[in-house]
Image (tube, rainbow, N blue to C red; front, side, top):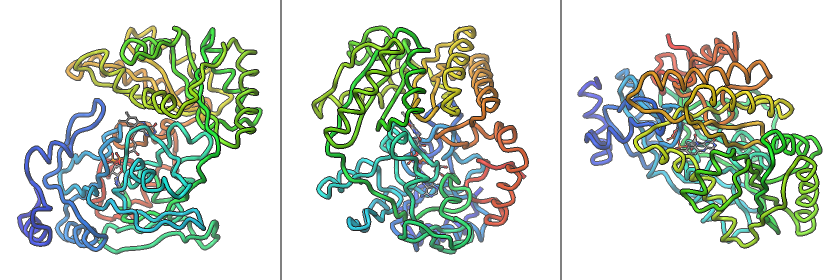
Amino acid sequence: MIPQDALSELASMLGERLSTGKSDLDLHGRSETYHAPMPPEAVVYPDTTEEVSRIVAICARHGVPVVGWGTGTALEGHGSAPRGGVTIDFRRMDKVLEVVPEDMLVRVQPGVTRESLNTELRATGLFFPVDPGANASLGGMAATRASGTTAVRYGTMADQVRALEVVLADGRIIHTGTRARKSSAGYDLTRLFVGSEGTLGLMTELTLRLWGQPEAVSAAVCGFDTTDGAIDAVITAMQMGLTPARIEYVDVATVRILNAADGAALPERPHLLLEFHGTEEAVAAEAARFGDIAAEHGGGAYAWATQAEDRSRLWSMRHRAYHTILATRPGATAVVTDVCVPISKLGEAIMRAAADIHASGLDGPILGHVGDGNYHAILLVDRDDPDEIAEAKRLSDAMVAHALDLGGTATGEHGVGFGKLHLMEAEHGAAWDVMGALKRALDPDGLMNPGKLVRQN
Ligand SMILES: Cc1cc2nc3c(=O)[nH]c(=O)nc-3n(C[C@H](O)[C@H](O)[C@H](O)COP(=O)(O)OP(=O)(O)OC[C@H]3O[C@@H](n4cnc5c(N)ncnc54)[C@H](O)[C@@H]3O)c2cc1C
């Protein structure tokens, strides 16, 4: 329970920007997937870094847990509050503070969403490429080291964050990184906080790298005779150094669902959804090279999405795929897998996963960012059926075990939260203890997003 003194201090500082209403608490305890809701005891809506610092300092003094909240789209229970406490919702800290076109940088508050940033950048000729589908906050994306469809060309959040302002567990405000493109000045604290899921500190400002809007963009879909063929085409393309901006796999089950629910009108075959960025000539050359590779692996002709509206329809359909798949079983929730393997092992990993899912009898369409070796099975389960959930988790754990054997990771982009906590020892061994030591050094009382990412005391 939050001590009354702590609540009073927060209330006198924040007034109506402190909420203990049930609907607000419930909203901040829910998860997008199968995890049981765990609401906080209060939600606060700060406007400034100084307010975040004072909130965290008050919580530290009273031993109250603190959980950051961006838009709440993380998939592994990241933002839930298993030990109660205060959730800091960053939605009011949503200002683009500075665009520096000459250095291709932008400084933002953490509550700015990726779509609103790109809207604001439209006239500059620059854009921010990381696209996890959901219109997530940049603070949440940095905290989960998010990636998504475009990471195959532009990299993940780890590659975009140049500098940070962070509020530490005791309320201190620090700055990490600089605007310079590189630095050898000590430990790379920026990279430490990126992906730390709010367990080490809260990001209150981010300096991010921007990219030039490509001169030409073209997108296409390409059906294949077999799953093997589609995946082998991806592997060959990546090994040959092609640089598609997006290269997404959807299996036959996903194609059927998109056809029925989204009017996709795709032939019932495994497909790759592709996008190429560059000059007119580079885009045409890359598309032609990939077309040749696809043909060698049983791929059909491209169906082009040439107009901007067609492209946006294509990617919007891809981004909605998770919810479209969920809707095929009313009331269902999902266990979502996220393994990532070296590109040479991708076919082996996906084929084993597909066979295991088929044998289990669960519905589990597979789709993913295959250019990165990353894919997801959306394992549909009845939230109230513990046997189904256990079976889906068994499948998910088996996929992770196989991925680790192949030199991969339990989570390519969604992160650990508490849903993937039990897999960390197998992936990291003694290095997971080092993560725990870092956590204790920065948050000795274990108040920053407790119950997530590191071993529990
Ligand atoms: C349909 C769907 C598709 C998705 N596809 C992808 C995908 O392709 N790629 C991908 O990477 N992810 C994907 N995700 C997951 C999710 O969108 C990402 O994890 C995203 O980065 C979360 O951002 P958020 O703003 O919603 O963060 P939240 O869910 O609000 O928070 C995530 C974590 O970050 C912490 N946090 C939030 N703000 C801060 C801050 N300012 N400082 C420190 N910690 C903070 C929270 O405490 C929590 O631990 C998908 C989710 C959905 C629902």
